[in-house]
Length: 110
Image (cartoon, rainbow, N blue to C red; front, side, top):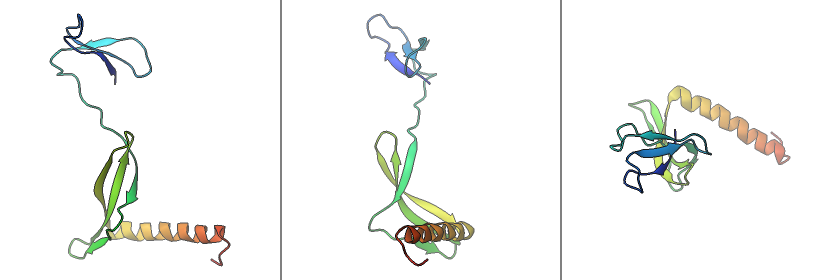
């Protein structure tokens, strides 16, 4: 992975000039860009999409939870978390434990 520091046609560059993020030894890539591939932005987290409800499809035996994915570059993307019945049960158990911990932290009786 590298950061482009010079494009073909800039100054005397006849190739792409790259260097590692944060510095280091430069290298070059052909001017036609055949060896360059975009690096996908990494997702950092997902949040529930406001105003939309989860849906269960009995024929597919899966649930769909509307979510918004958030990426390193700050961009969001709407999507869905698709869960099988077993995954729904696991998520239910996990979120129930989280809610119990929350209530205990607030001094509840759980």
